[in-house]
Image 1 (cartoon, rainbow, N blue to C red):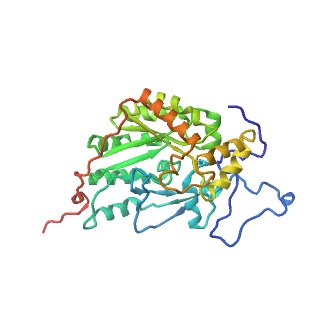
Image 2: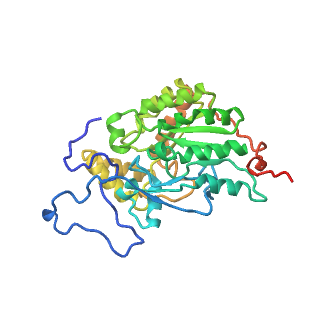
Image 3: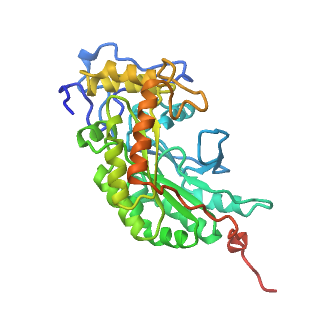
Length: 356
């Protein structure tokens, strides 16, 4: 993919700006840039901010999602994926959905303890819980904090089903627990890959593992007996929409049992962040990409309509659907993921038994 070199491109982060928080009455502006000794948006270190929730299981009512329950040990994500829908949630905490989302990470250090408390509540009924429905539970800070690993220990202790979605090879650190969960039919994993083009990945997902690195994750998880699917997400018309057949083919060769896709949608502040990014990263095709995205969502970059927002509609979206379906039929003719068990859940595992 050819690209035009842009000296203004802010390397090392996905977002190129800090968008205005719609909940804030004030905003930062650069009135006199000639007076600054260094760029206003310098590549500052990541800041960790502690959060202390009383509940950690989130419930969704979206009919578009394959999961209803999720746990997120982190809010914000250093991966910096430019399209991430979770960026908007950062505004509720008083931060920008742009660079703040990548540099100010909220962490729930007691997330495993709170989850265990919820499992032990009278009347709790197990449902498959997704790690994570919002930001990647294996983002870089997990290497140090091990919050996701602590959650997996609780899932195994209580024999509770869990599904994981990630794009980081750090997941392989926890093969020991993951293998035990899978042996009990309590685990499946989705690995997100949307391009084999390294130049595109480095700009669109700047702090993520390479595509082939993620393919190796699929293979190693599969070899450990863990069911894995490929998520081609998100598909961006004009940037990676032609890559689905190759992605599905290689993922199948590495052991993936199924595949799915979503079309990018740019809700809230993400429209401004993505528009700014694509004009800086790919100025030669920026308008074409934006028009193609809008063509999938009723003429708008923003799409919240259930049933359409994830897959799109119109000629552009239909072409993407057909390309995906043909590739899936060719390379994964028996595609499907096993159901997870709900009948093994045992809250007695978490209770202290005393002898009198």
